[in-house]
Length: 295
Image 1 (tube, rainbow, N blue to C red):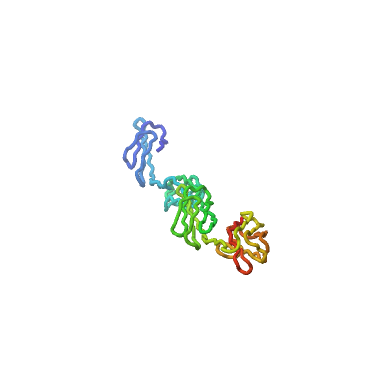
Image 2 (cartoon, one colour):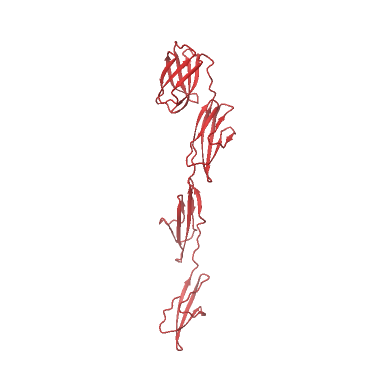
């Protein structure tokens, strides 16, 4: 309360008629919403004058955005100071009653109630980069070699091999005791943040031909486009063929009418992956079966 009196040296402040201070300027702490009468008696040499004003007092709003917190980069946080205010002003100049926060930084809101009273609060948000799960696999018969390709530096791995077995090794090689298609899932985590991904993995026996060839050399591997197949242990003077099959058993390319033990083939246009070369005579007699990797 500021005293604007002139030609006076003694003062008496009152609230609702009750004396409370004789200071020149003073302060009074209100304890609730109310309308009060503020009086001031100023005097000099037994001469006095009185001034009085009414004041409406309101309890200011009190908001709390909560404690500073940390979230994963794949999550978000809804900040809400509370409902019922006539105005909201966030640090980005938006004016909604809530704000969706997903990036690191300090978030601040100022609210104004119907009486024109204000309050403000801030929250510091930290964001941890969620590791993003990804992997590849190379079939080695019924043994599958898995390679973790996850990003954002995971520190923990959990593999579900689709048959009830699991592993926490980063790059496991797992031997299946049955063939089929298994849905393999990898979950990666770091500092409480995690993600997962699942891939259908075909598991099949790669049967070696019980028939004619004693050895088959395929080079170079992995194959980029042109490659050579050299069959040893049989004289392939009659027509024979090679089928390039994916791991689901589907034929994706065929080379027919081949003659001779050394063949130069081209796999250009075939997607990268692991495939099976099934070699047989045109009469159907099996020659050999070998695995091939296309890059």
